[in-house]
Length: 125
Image (cartoon, rainbow, N blue to C red):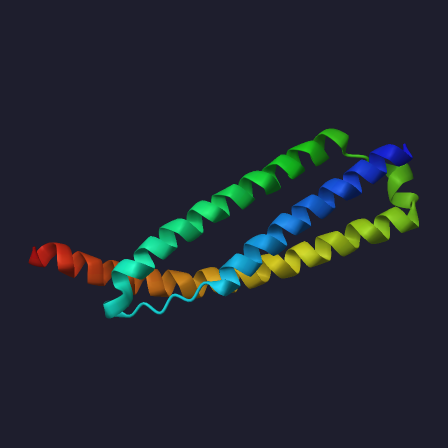
């Protein structure tokens, strides 16, 4: 049983690592939504979301493996050390998800501006 819990925790760490990497990439992106940068930022958006999809695939893979192991029976939850670690991972994941949601909101605003500028350019051609 200990090996299942160890594998579960390892998968949680893999998921957390992927989420942290995705957050780091998101934080490194600066989308201004300025008209003069619209084409460059549009390409950067596409690249950014491709990278995100890779991280989402890693997260999904870890989640799928966790669901197969799913050692969270009554006996496992009674293991205080294990439970504390699981809760710790989950809290970190929730914090990252909140930060990502804030960044996504800001990015969505910039993307809307970029889309307007690009549409104007298409209409002028």
